[in-house]
Length: 240
Image (cartoon, rainbow, N blue to C red; front, side, top):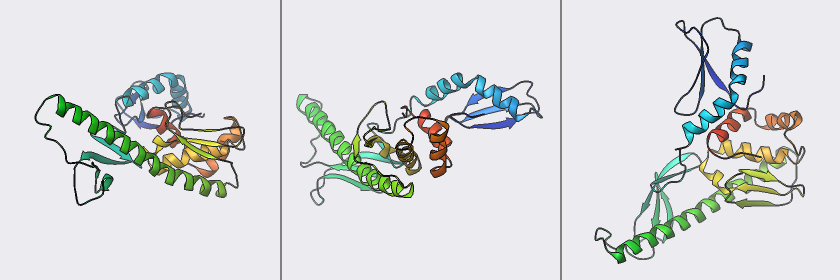
């Protein structure tokens, strides 16, 4: 029986019936009495698939990969910080576990609350976010473009153009003209997740659908695609 997610099965001698739960990480757990056949458990999970998807989304709706205090780059968490230095180049710098924005001019004393300092702080935060977005898009482009050519070569598939955009509803897409589009916000995720999206879209060059043959091709180049697909579903957007 095929699912768009995987689950962890646990037995409990005190259990009298099958039970579903979702842990903090969004993992699906099925608890059952001992000696319940696997096909019965599979049927139980399939029957409750809609509830599971809703519960997973609810469990992850507060998870943010880019906030005012931190962000993730390739799955690693970095603390955001604004710090002026006249000895280093202005712009974005990754130092250790920090992503630091060095502005062109020294910071004003924002402890003094007045119209000028509020405007200065708002302007600084706006410039910081613009610099961060440009940095993330550039970082995503360097990885995704190179990796798409590498995986395309491995899959013996060719395409025309690669475009990166910031999108709200898709991680990637493939057109009938053999053009590939990727959401640059993928840069927040582990490279295994990014590779899955690339393989997914490259596979659409062969199968412009989500048929059994399509998923078979995806699985050939990403044996853990079910885990990666489930992870994406738990963390926000849909993949078409």
